[in-house]
Length: 235
Image (cartoon, rainbow, N blue to C red; front, top):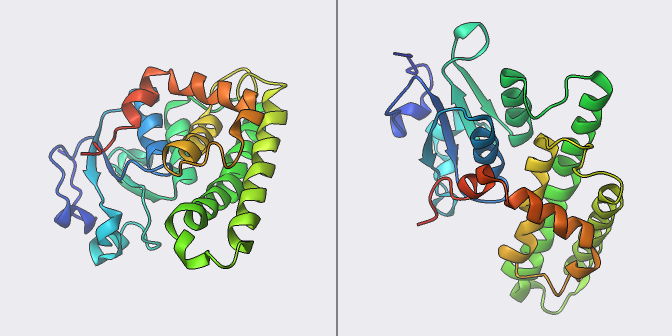
């Protein structure tokens, strides 16, 4: 049995089976990236629900694994050299899981870097900008009722990024070519969230991006997506 005692987070969220991956997450657009990847890869894992609404991610135990206090985070008891490893930042976790299994990331160097470009496009663009749009459009709308600038700024940027995705998906089946990859897993939950979480389908005129809509639908139709979107359970 793996010894995870070196990770203080396990004192607050004990591992029932320390021999499998321990995932600390919530079913948000950022959190489900890792659960979807784990389902796609068929890796056994145990989930610990991190209710960010209670600021539990700011506790010393959680910060010991992710100093930035954000979900998701992960411990793999079978890391490099057979030793446990702790990881944070969803992009880093996705790359790690893909490299660990040899799946969801092309092995050809040129194709690999193409996939990584689109992965980091999500990390640096889609995630932050869509998140800011949702904040000002839905969660802080009352605070900026007399100042339309914040919402307009991020709405315009969200639509610009959707346009970038639309242009790419006019040329390829998936973001990085003909094969589904961690770039798709990182990105489509955020696009889906514009409607599901923010209720902005009409406001953003998502119908103007039909290739993006078809891509999201295809990604959601995968069994791993259906499972991963409910990890940990929303109830």
